[in-house]
Each structure stands twice: as C-alpha cells, then as structure tokens.
Length: 300
Image 1 (spheres, rainbow, N blue to C red):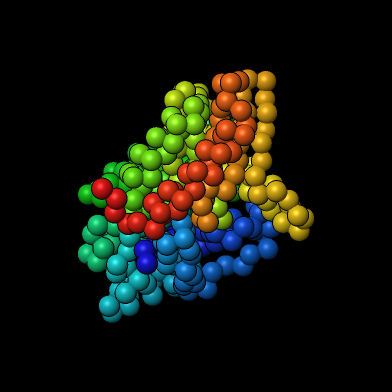
Image 2 (image 1 turned 120 degrees about the horizontal axis):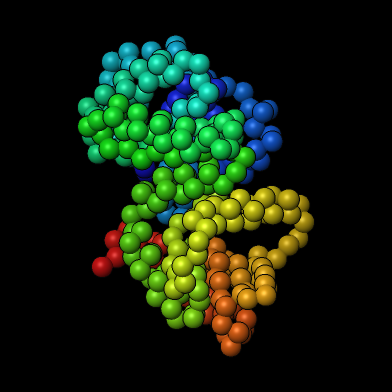
C-alpha cells in the first residue's frame, strides 16, 4: 500500500480535489463539503492491484502543530508522495511556507525518498492573462525554498482540466510497471495503425499512459477528455448506457472502450481503410495481455 500525504492550509481546497478525483464528486457540489477534522485516511484502489493509503490532513494551525509535536511523527513515516496544496490567493502565504518547510524537514528525516508535488490551487481566481506569470513566480520560489528536495509544481483548479493533469502525473510516479505499460501501449498503437492510443484508469479517468504516431499540438487534450468523459459517466449514472463509444469526425474516428477491469482505452484513427470492426477486434485481442500487465509489478 502506497502512502500519500495530502497537506496544506485550511481552505486551500484539498478535500474538494480529493472528492472530485477519487469520489466522483462534481466541482459545483464541493461547496457542500466541510473542513477536514484532523486526518481522514482512506484506502483507494487503483489499477486493480495498487492500493493508495490517502491521508487528507486538516490544515488548521492546531492540526499542524499536532503533526509536528507527535513524539514518533508517524504521519511522516513511510510516505511515497507528499502533495502540498497552496491557495494562490492566501493572505497568509508566509505562514503557509513555514508549515510547508517544516513538513519537508520531517519528510527528509522519516521518508527521504518521498516525491514532493506542489499544487498552486484556485488559479481560476487569477485573471487568465496573468496566470502563467503568477504560477511561474510561485514555482521558482518554491523550488528554492524546497532545497535540497526536488519538487514538481502544477497550477490547478477544480473548474478545468488542470486538476486532472496534476493528479495524472502524481499517480504516474506510483505505478510500479509504468515503463512496461508504456512500451506495450506503443506496440499496440502501431499494430492498430492508430494515430494515438490513450489509457485511462477506469474509475477516476486519470490518464495512465499514451502512445502516438502523430504529434498533436494540444498538450492538455487528455485531461480535457478525462473531464468530459467523467462528466458524461456521472450524468448517465442512473441510465443504462453503453460501455463503449465511437465518435466519427471529418478526418478521424475515435473509439473509447473498456480494455481491462481497471482501464479504458481511447484509440484515434485517421486512416479511412481501417474499419471500426478491425479496431474493435484489436481491442478485444489485447484485453488479456493488458490484464496480465496490470497484475505484474515488474516486467522484463
């Protein structure tokens, strides 16, 4: 089981993002969520065989002081990933940094191999034309303040695809056989004659891996698709609907189908000579192979 700490000051948006990604909540309903009291620990199944022990840590001052004062500092032990959420419009950013750096000190002591991700959150509250500069300034500052730890930083909002982009990268680093999955997905893409193949986790619709033979200019298209497909599934939850989908455009055909018990696959094909039946046969033929890959922690 892989331990993930989700930390940040109270009101930063930690519980909202957790509920959207892992509990199929929608952004507009996160206003109904109350503040986290102390620590809410939950086990999240991911890709069938991988378990995440997600610790959503309350961000009020009294809770932080308790985390640091606990004699054995168990909260910071055996951590695989620390996700620290910063409210971009916080009026107490200096205090945020103090708590963050103290957390890093304990991470270095008790989980020195943990990966650290910083999410600059609520970016929708910054005017669009200024967002990139605000994020770059925050990222540079955090990179300096985090030394010697090397961090990855993302700008996020619950209202767009950036939240999915960040959490896809976080989850990506936890998948033990990701290299083998990516290699096999590349082979599958070529065998299908596809422009691109994207593998999604079936519950969260986070992007796990992709392979392409044609470059696409939109770097955030997968996360946009994650958001769209998840909203579609949520809206259709009470209805009987197909587990597969085909979308035909003027220059391409997109197939979305279940690949394994834990994943869905999207295949983009522009070659008019490749029939939908052939693509569906390829998906069916690949299922057993990718099912086996999911259950293996190390593939040579």
